[in-house]
Amino acid sequence: MKVYITRKIQPKAIKFLREKGFTVSVYPKDKPIPRNVLLKNIKNIDALIPLLTDKIDKEVIDKMSKCKIIANYAVGYENIDIEYAKKKNIIVTNTPDVLTDSTADLAMTLTLACTRRLFESRKLIDDKKFKHWKPDLLLGYEIKNKIFGIVGAGRIGEAVAKRAYAFGTKIIYNSLFINKKIEKKFGAKKVSLNKLLKTSDFVSLHVPSNKGTYHLLNKKNLNLLKKSAVLVNTSRGSIIDEDALVNVLQKKKIFSTGLDVYEHEPKIHPGLLKLENVVLAPHIGSATVEARTSMAMLAAKNVASVLKGNKPITPVL
View (tube, rainbow, N blue to C red):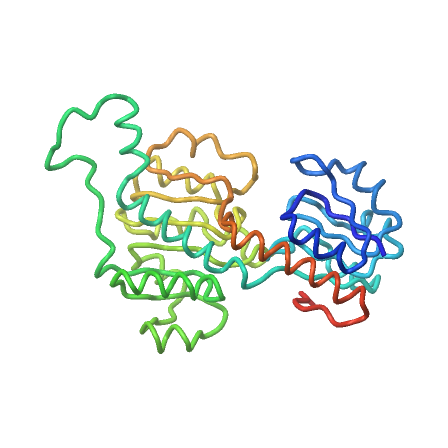
């Protein structure tokens, strides 16, 4: 049975699949696979492991007449037409849980970097403007005794709540469901999105990308944020209207923002690049050795399970 992988992933996963007796082919270049190459190479495969950068739509799915599983190398799966895959009896899986801690760690890293103005600090040094210590030099805020707002109380949101609580913050959250675990362990309280934005000192976003979350933060509600607020996004770029975000940052209606994802990724809004009260990262939420290896192995194990006639481990439907 043939497995096609659209980008080089961790060797351990490829070795695992080959040891299971599968023929594995990998697109060798370290960049997104060109559409024409993808369509050419998937005609006779039994399983596909794509990345989030690969659009697996009806055209791609129709080319894979033998395919039994699409094992996405990501937690999100907005790159795949899952309803059409289901119609074609193709199982779709993702990689939840294994990148929860790495993404939560980055959310807190961005929070700290913003509140302590690390980007501006480095720039001051690089520009050779640091002459001496001053009482009012690059003053930021402490996290302790502040209100930490979490939008989306799933696995990652829950992991962020744990970390924020350890810093001595009061946790509030907005979610489609009540998370009894964080309410019991961390005293978190579920509130409306508007109330969360109005009252939080820190806001961290952890919702999936779909029609309901598109521009969840927009021109109207971004203006509800405190002038001292820090906004962090490690979920998906489409959650924030970046034009509106740049506007509030330029006018200093909020203190700072930390972003790991972008509305038109990999393109970054030019306004964000010009601002000093912004900390930018190149979509590295899961970029740890542990998380990426676990992602690769989970995708591989999903493939092996399905092709051996068993149930998938982490189906999305």
